[in-house]
Image 1: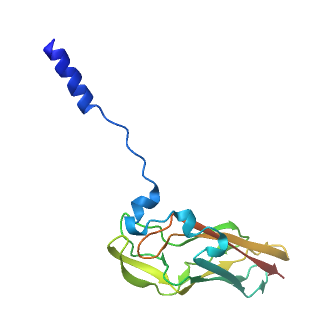
Image 2 (image 1 turned 90 degrees about the vertical axis):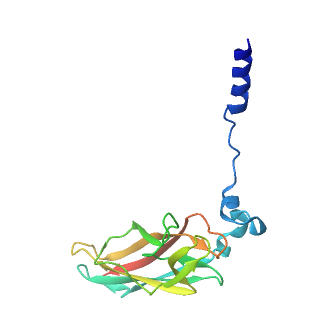
Image 3 (image 1 turned 30 degrees about the vertical axis):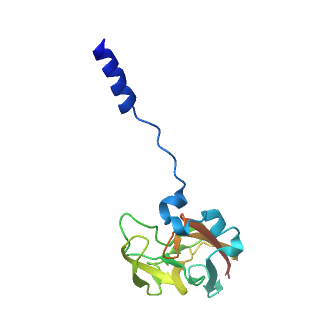
Length: 181
């Protein structure tokens, strides 16, 4: 009988209890600076990163090349990760993804030089963009592309930080018209 009671007590003490869910913003920020991420950026006009897309030249012949330039500006106090130096495991670097493009990249993208910082969020070196930056991608137009106005569209994915807290990966769309002669 004593063995049964002892076994029951051990089960009660050692039985796993369900884990308490912790909101993501509490995992990322110290208690003194906690703010729900939805409150940090409640609307698109509060977005800390802005992207302007331009195409040079705006008109090109089929079989030619154009260069897409994405000019980014960040609100004061914010930065985005650029790579190649990033903490591991760590943040997501800024990336371009295409949703509509009649052209193919002709070589690697070119970027403005990033700034290397000691990231206080991750406690490691990281390459980041602050204030303003640019990314350029040369695109080769297929020789078979019909004369018309086409759209080059996509989005930029990124994580923005302010030295105390980082957002989840965010997505910012861009689109620019391309006239094929």
